[in-house]
Length: 232
Ligand code: ADP
Ligand code: ADP
Figure: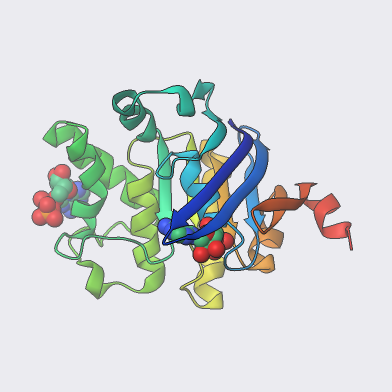
């Protein structure tokens, strides 16, 4: 579902050059939960943002669902990007909009008619266990509820792939548990392919089928979870 070949990325600025990606290749099978584990600065975020080309790699290819995104012009890319959902550490919700308004936002952008939008929003809120909270504002929600809104919004366009950028790092252990449970459930029920980045081994252990360990812009280990965790 996701195929990445030999990605390189160097950030240049004020004389200093930082190598964020130093030849990363990755294959995530359809229906798989794949975790990339590493310390701060390892290059995880740059890698994740390369999958939907929010970040442009200097070289290498990114293919999602059989479409080589790195070969597309910007206009086509915007369309393909809507097929890839993303969730964030700090949720990235619009504070002036209700829960329903946040979830509806991507549907408005893509021109889904009002009635279809309302039906889809209700369906999504039920999917993430937030039925009854449609009219609340983000400030009235717990962290776990905010992330549920983030997940509902990410799934609005019925993507095949979900990218998770440290989605539980701002949450307490109990809430982390329930959000990871939701992601595992969505993976099973929808066949959703999930690529997540995290600095927490427990996250990888709990829900990932496969994993890679990232350090200095490279994978030092990768494979099925049992193999990766078994290595010293
Ligand atoms: P991680 O997500 O694992 O913390 P990042 O991908 O954010 O790693 O960063 C990898 C490296 O690239 C780090 O050294 C970071 O400081 C650097 N970096 C990230 N984004 C930028 C940027 N926009 N400009 C310059 N350097 C950056
Ligand atoms: P905002 O004021 O933040 O834009 P709206 O109340 O206009 O939010 O709602 C945005 C979208 O959510 C609309 O498509 C609307 O039909 C839908 N919506 C609003 N309230 C509900 C609800 N209780 N259940 C399901 N969908 C709703």
